[in-house]
Amino acid sequence: MVTNYLYIMITTLKFKDYPRNEKIFIIGLIVWILLQISRFIAFVLIDDINTGAESKAWMYPAYLDIFAAVMALPLAMAIVKGRGLMTWTFTIVYLAISIVDHFGNFTTTGIVGPPSIVEEGSSPYLIPVIQTIIDFAFLILLLTPKYYSLFFKIIKE
Image (cartoon, rainbow, N blue to C red; front, side):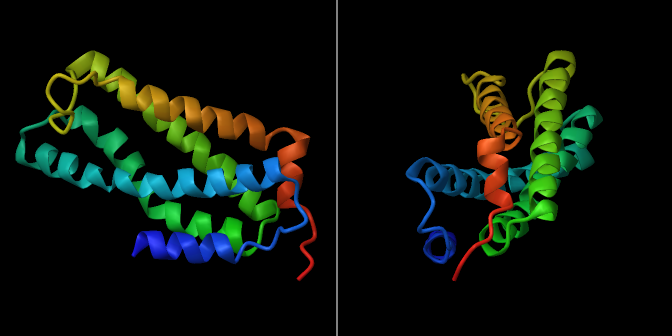
């Protein structure tokens, strides 16, 4: 279902006159944001916290993960349907909150250890580091004139 919706979203983008790198940027941003839906796994962590199996220190990062998962689809739709100041601003805020969440994850992992949802034998820092780098890269690109102007171009239908 998600892949069908993603296909429909991408095929309805109205930017045939955009250069290739700008198309790749917009599609990459949309795909990256939609991948954040997987952060709903934080519900498992919240359940573990409520049953006492996990430290309450994990509650803040879990809530930020839920925020990222809940807002992913509306943000992706906003980028597809009508980019503008509000969408650009919300994308910046979304990525900033995501980065704050990852730093909360680093801090909590360093203080109380990794959560139970981290697979045995894997590094509890690897995935959050990769996510932080990608979030930061998109954030920096969104602040450059070449890419923030994509949110303010008039789209001819």
